[in-house]
Length: 288
Image (cartoon, rainbow, N blue to C red; front, side, top):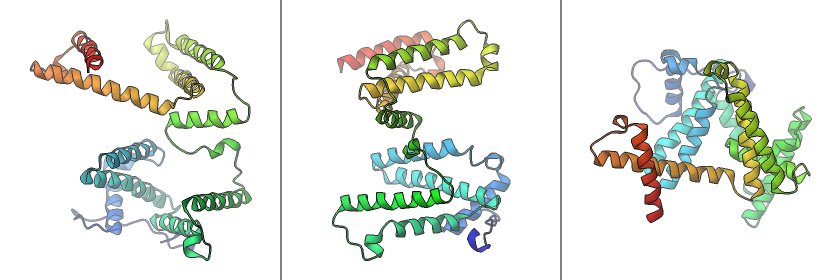
């Protein structure tokens, strides 16, 4: 099935209602069927699936933390779905298929473990990590020889936007591209917030929508600047944001619980009542 030997094939769609067999080929055939008969699956592209792949990776991390086998199996399956989905679409484009992906992974694992498959002897995990990095450097040099040049910030790994923002700032700082103290970072944040306000204040909804791409850029600049402030304080922007997310979920959960005690649903409440319960949630946090 490898594209390298000109035998790549697009998986044939399963017919009828398939059974769950646990076989990879059957999963590929099921995905091929969904690409034909499911309106949502049909309209997806490799780019449109990017947010889902990121989301599933985070959900897998949460499931592992929960240590619930059923949740872990489900989330591992969702991650696998992303791999299968992408492979199906690339196969449809005639670029490569699942066999190519598996082959590439097998070759990489063998290449990066010479202490297992060759005569090399590495005494501990630290030595393994060092050798792994050396091999990755050799791979990058091979990529550069194929015309895939690497710039300094390319070493920043993929991750959430906050993580990447903080990492690129750290790398730039190592090269002297940074403010000496926090004052410059705070001033930059103020500047970016002012520019965002300029795009929003005294503008009609129609005007904002008509200029939404510029608003998006200014909003991104604000968030990037705020990450810079966190970095200058030696705080992790991702962790700080997650703390806020968990706090919001906890307070909103308190609102829902109190409404339930009163025999009401969230949909039956209004902003005035929910605001009052929000303040009560904050008081509850302080007293607990």
